[in-house]
Image (cartoon, rainbow, N blue to C red):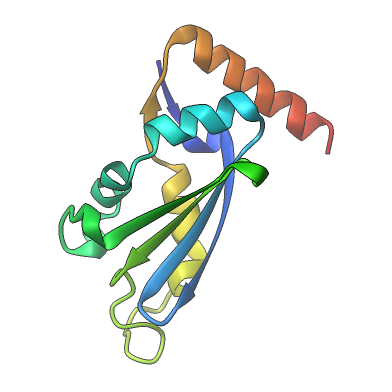
Length: 126
């Protein structure tokens, strides 16, 4: 079953010079394990190929943060030189998290159901 990351995770992002920085957060332990397996540097590079000028996974760094059930991604060279050099009129790295949350991942029916329930419980508790 295909799910968008937005259904099973939440994210924040920012920018520094020509790098976009994304924090992808699971709602629970099962979600973190699924993100760790499904959201690889190559998948992220493919998803952001329009910004990276190709699917160069070497331009995407991934840092697992198990203590906070998160993955940190750094997209090097993704911001057209950064705010001082770019002609882009958006907020540069601030909107990258929303773009990542549109990525779809393939999960088993059982796991997808478990993660959707995990996300529902976590957001209801807020």
